[in-house]
Image 1: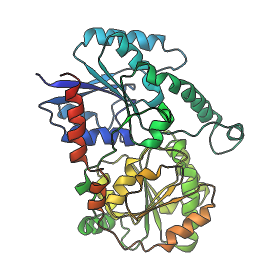
Image 2: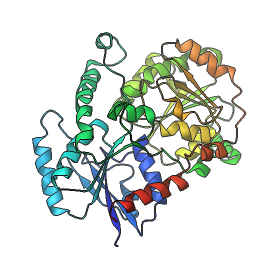
Image 3: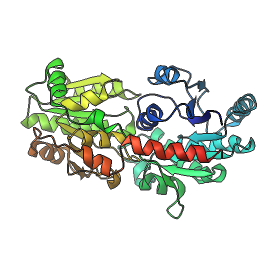
Image 4: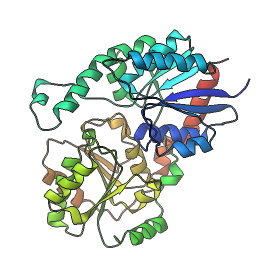
Length: 379
């Protein structure tokens, strides 16, 4: 048996949750037996591209999928599979958009076609159309996704999910699926006092309360609410600092909002970083008020680092592996979130490594499981 090449399908391999998760597996998998290649839907170079190629992976770049007119995409994908007959496994991480590549993969009799759920989107209500929580454009995107999710199961042979909430949303509550945990390299994130001191000194925040957030700048993450929470924190703790790690289409909008709230001097936009495990060491509190998620890997990482976490209660409680996470409603006021943040003793960092391992979110054991699954598909 030669090396099994698995075609992983993503939008773009930047440092998002699903992308970071699959890279954790890729780094640990036995690449003498299994190799990952990537079909992406953006032409520009992404954060993980160089590492993928260094690990022996190939990257194939397509244009974005037009969900209303997918004909051109289908034809290009047919041409691709005619040229690349080496794939017996296609593992799609496009959530509702997985229906597009899996349809053509089925045409070409690819035996293992995995649809992987990474997110659970709230249903669109009439009230949401008139609320200011999300734009009309985002609501329209949701409506399209709600229609597409009905098609995902049709052409998939296997259904995977990061957790129960995402799987139930994409596949249905009465449909069984395999949970592939958003596992992390736990030891990399375990609290390290010397790294914490080094980074606090480097960023000149040795005497500051450091509030951290890691996430793509998109409406889903609810950054406006995060900035309002931080403004309330500053009323009582003027030396506090908010560190926002990531990039995305709304970054410039959030920079302007920080200025409008007169908090820009205390907000630092760090962009996409390769040293996220080290950044977690200097965070005192991690705040994550998303509208919706699947099972965010950043919350596993934050708990591994012993950080106190405040997350929106729209996020699945499956992510609760330690006593360091608390769920709050985004219907509560920013001030109430700020009061919760300021009430905790941020100087205490717990050793949560064993709890992450016991919760089955350590990458070593999880990699062995997915490796065996892939090998079984071609026996």
